[in-house]
Image (cartoon, rainbow, N blue to C red; front, side):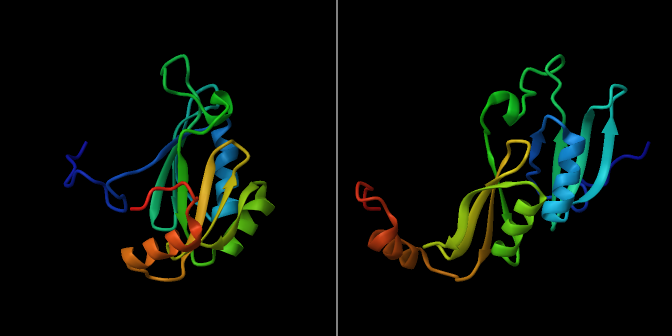
Length: 163
Protein backbone atom coordinates (compact mmCIF):
# COMPACT_ATOMS: atom_id res chain seq x y z
CA UNK A 1 0.00 0.00 0.00
CA UNK A 2 1.28 3.43 -0.94
CA UNK A 3 0.20 6.58 0.89
CA UNK A 4 -1.72 9.00 -1.35
CA UNK A 5 0.18 12.09 -2.46
CA UNK A 6 -2.93 14.26 -2.85
CA UNK A 7 -6.38 14.26 -1.25
CA UNK A 8 -8.27 14.64 -4.55
CA UNK A 9 -7.27 11.94 -7.05
CA UNK A 10 -5.90 13.04 -10.43
CA UNK A 11 -8.67 13.59 -12.99
CA UNK A 12 -11.35 14.23 -10.36
CA UNK A 13 -13.07 17.47 -9.37
CA UNK A 14 -14.06 18.48 -5.85
CA UNK A 15 -17.62 17.16 -6.29
CA UNK A 16 -18.24 13.78 -7.91
CA UNK A 17 -21.90 12.79 -8.29
CA UNK A 18 -22.89 9.24 -7.32
CA UNK A 19 -26.08 7.77 -8.74
CA UNK A 20 -27.94 4.82 -7.25
CA UNK A 21 -29.43 2.95 -10.20
CA UNK A 22 -31.56 -0.20 -10.32
CA UNK A 23 -29.64 -2.07 -13.03
CA UNK A 24 -26.34 -0.19 -12.82
CA UNK A 25 -24.58 -2.46 -15.34
CA UNK A 26 -27.27 -1.72 -17.94
CA UNK A 27 -27.05 1.98 -17.08
CA UNK A 28 -23.32 1.93 -17.85
CA UNK A 29 -24.05 0.60 -21.33
CA UNK A 30 -26.73 3.27 -21.82
CA UNK A 31 -24.37 6.06 -20.70
CA UNK A 32 -21.72 4.78 -23.12
CA UNK A 33 -24.20 4.94 -26.03
CA UNK A 34 -26.01 8.12 -25.02
CA UNK A 35 -23.18 10.27 -23.64
CA UNK A 36 -19.96 8.63 -24.86
CA UNK A 37 -19.06 7.53 -21.32
CA UNK A 38 -15.79 5.72 -20.74
CA UNK A 39 -15.86 3.03 -18.06
CA UNK A 40 -13.01 3.52 -15.58
CA UNK A 41 -13.75 0.75 -13.09
CA UNK A 42 -16.41 -1.67 -11.97
CA UNK A 43 -16.67 -3.54 -8.66
CA UNK A 44 -19.33 -6.27 -8.80
CA UNK A 45 -20.60 -8.18 -5.78
CA UNK A 46 -20.95 -11.98 -5.83
CA UNK A 47 -24.67 -11.65 -6.71
CA UNK A 48 -23.84 -9.53 -9.80
CA UNK A 49 -24.89 -6.11 -8.54
CA UNK A 50 -22.41 -3.28 -8.79
CA UNK A 51 -21.11 -2.03 -5.46
CA UNK A 52 -19.24 0.75 -7.27
CA UNK A 53 -18.51 1.87 -10.80
CA UNK A 54 -16.79 4.93 -12.19
CA UNK A 55 -17.36 6.50 -15.60
CA UNK A 56 -15.80 9.46 -17.32
CA UNK A 57 -18.11 11.68 -19.35
CA UNK A 58 -16.18 14.52 -20.96
CA UNK A 59 -13.82 15.84 -18.28
CA UNK A 60 -15.92 14.65 -15.34
CA UNK A 61 -16.20 11.45 -13.33
CA UNK A 62 -19.54 9.91 -12.38
CA UNK A 63 -19.89 7.19 -9.76
CA UNK A 64 -22.80 4.78 -9.79
CA UNK A 65 -23.94 1.67 -8.00
CA UNK A 66 -26.90 -0.64 -7.67
CA UNK A 67 -29.38 -0.41 -4.83
CA UNK A 68 -28.31 -2.10 -1.58
CA UNK A 69 -31.28 -1.53 0.76
CA UNK A 70 -30.10 -4.38 2.99
CA UNK A 71 -26.92 -2.43 3.79
CA UNK A 72 -27.72 1.25 3.34
CA UNK A 73 -30.95 3.12 4.14
CA UNK A 74 -30.30 5.81 1.51
CA UNK A 75 -29.63 3.29 -1.25
CA UNK A 76 -32.72 3.82 -3.39
CA UNK A 77 -32.89 4.48 -7.11
CA UNK A 78 -35.28 6.88 -8.86
CA UNK A 79 -37.20 3.79 -10.01
CA UNK A 80 -37.76 2.66 -6.41
CA UNK A 81 -38.46 6.17 -5.12
CA UNK A 82 -40.82 6.87 -8.05
CA UNK A 83 -38.98 10.18 -8.48
CA UNK A 84 -35.50 11.52 -8.94
CA UNK A 85 -33.79 13.50 -6.22
CA UNK A 86 -31.32 15.34 -8.46
CA UNK A 87 -30.83 16.28 -12.09
CA UNK A 88 -27.49 15.72 -13.75
CA UNK A 89 -26.44 18.68 -15.92
CA UNK A 90 -24.29 17.90 -18.94
CA UNK A 91 -22.54 20.59 -21.00
CA UNK A 92 -21.76 19.45 -24.55
CA UNK A 93 -20.62 20.97 -27.84
CA UNK A 94 -24.01 20.41 -29.55
CA UNK A 95 -27.04 20.11 -27.25
CA UNK A 96 -29.43 19.26 -30.09
CA UNK A 97 -27.28 16.36 -31.32
CA UNK A 98 -26.60 15.13 -27.76
CA UNK A 99 -30.29 15.05 -26.85
CA UNK A 100 -31.12 13.23 -30.07
CA UNK A 101 -28.34 10.67 -29.46
CA UNK A 102 -29.66 10.02 -25.93
CA UNK A 103 -33.21 9.55 -27.27
CA UNK A 104 -31.91 7.08 -29.85
CA UNK A 105 -30.17 5.20 -27.02
CA UNK A 106 -33.46 4.93 -25.08
CA UNK A 107 -34.00 8.21 -23.19
CA UNK A 108 -37.30 10.10 -23.17
CA UNK A 109 -37.35 13.82 -23.93
CA UNK A 110 -38.72 15.97 -21.12
CA UNK A 111 -38.02 19.34 -22.73
CA UNK A 112 -36.93 20.04 -26.30
CA UNK A 113 -33.66 21.88 -26.74
CA UNK A 114 -34.21 25.62 -27.05
CA UNK A 115 -32.39 28.90 -26.61
CA UNK A 116 -32.66 30.11 -23.02
CA UNK A 117 -32.47 33.63 -21.57
CA UNK A 118 -29.26 32.86 -19.64
CA UNK A 119 -27.30 32.11 -22.83
CA UNK A 120 -27.52 28.33 -23.11
CA UNK A 121 -29.18 26.11 -25.67
CA UNK A 122 -30.89 23.77 -23.20
CA UNK A 123 -33.15 20.71 -23.05
CA UNK A 124 -34.00 17.81 -20.77
CA UNK A 125 -34.50 14.06 -20.72
CA UNK A 126 -35.09 11.12 -18.42
CA UNK A 127 -32.94 8.05 -18.94
CA UNK A 128 -34.34 4.48 -18.92
CA UNK A 129 -33.41 4.20 -15.22
CA UNK A 130 -35.45 7.21 -14.07
CA UNK A 131 -32.56 9.67 -13.75
CA UNK A 132 -33.20 13.14 -15.16
CA UNK A 133 -30.58 15.00 -17.19
CA UNK A 134 -30.37 18.51 -18.57
CA UNK A 135 -28.19 19.00 -21.63
CA UNK A 136 -26.81 22.37 -22.66
CA UNK A 137 -24.38 24.21 -24.89
CA UNK A 138 -23.32 27.77 -24.08
CA UNK A 139 -24.21 29.95 -27.07
CA UNK A 140 -23.90 33.45 -25.54
CA UNK A 141 -21.90 34.91 -22.68
CA UNK A 142 -24.25 37.33 -20.93
CA UNK A 143 -23.83 39.63 -17.97
CA UNK A 144 -26.17 39.22 -14.99
CA UNK A 145 -27.86 42.45 -16.06
CA UNK A 146 -28.51 41.12 -19.59
CA UNK A 147 -29.96 37.89 -18.17
CA UNK A 148 -32.17 39.82 -15.76
CA UNK A 149 -33.50 42.05 -18.56
CA UNK A 150 -34.26 39.04 -20.77
CA UNK A 151 -35.96 37.23 -17.92
CA UNK A 152 -38.11 40.23 -17.08
CA UNK A 153 -39.13 40.86 -20.70
CA UNK A 154 -40.55 37.52 -21.54
CA UNK A 155 -39.06 34.56 -19.75
CA UNK A 156 -40.32 34.99 -16.19
CA UNK A 157 -43.83 34.08 -15.00
CA UNK A 158 -46.08 37.10 -14.53
CA UNK A 159 -46.19 36.43 -10.77
CA UNK A 160 -42.40 36.33 -10.36
CA UNK A 161 -40.92 38.86 -7.99
CA UNK A 162 -38.56 41.42 -9.47
CA UNK A 163 -34.96 40.72 -8.54
